[in-house]
Length: 391
Image (cartoon, rainbow, N blue to C red; front, side):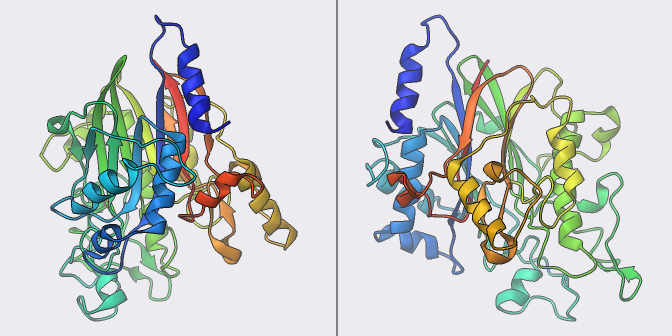
């Protein structure tokens, strides 16, 4: 029995007077290109990659989903192509066609030139990786590794809050990373006050779901690697995750700096219901990164405690690495991605709901190899994570 059928059966069994369940998901799709317009060209053809991503979505059928690493273009051509050509057409191994009447996408910091020497190589910009390292967020062209929100329910676009322009130095407790080889701050006195915190963006997307408004809090912090002993990416990852903690705290003292790109200041109202979603690039116990950042978010007083999503395929993959000597501390069934023989499998992708929801269940779409659906699960090194919620 497919997951789509299981979902339909669950909805059929719901009493007519019960609140409508809400399935929320996050999926790092790896639908990006190193060339501007490259994803559009791929989707205009017959992309086996995009078909697998669409098939997974058609199988799980989330009501509300964040797609990470989906290249942004100002005309939204890639989003149009993916929705109409792939999602709205039944794919091999997937479920029926899937239509999302509502979506949100916007510019991100990746690939946008900063005009500053952020990697300290003595040059501003350049080509290839040199240019990417000096962008506000690493990327080879503006919009690479962007974000796309798809929804069955109306999105209040006018009320969306974006924090793409928020400066890292304004966050309480933020410090300029220090290069231990020189004892000096990594970022220059010119760069540090200008540096944006979000490597892509942080969005609060209000969705009018059955039962009330859900604030979909989505982001994709930088990986805490690809740097040096100064740990600039590790510290940035922790601060990007920490931004959501400040947003949920909604302390009066934060109103002076916690301002969105439209100039509205302050955090999320205490009574608001929310779901945090994204590839947060931080495992609670394994890999690089400041683990306390994700642990503090998981344990925030406003975040609902519930069982951690699991998968049989992830567990098998993690145990296979352990058999080869790559042993991890975390529970193998909780991993959400396979990052190769050096990094192994880790839990990096999260769907975290607020108090005020009931948690009905969830999982990671990572079938074991014996399951025919494993043929569509390898479209990305990450796997879709979902949660079923009810007001």
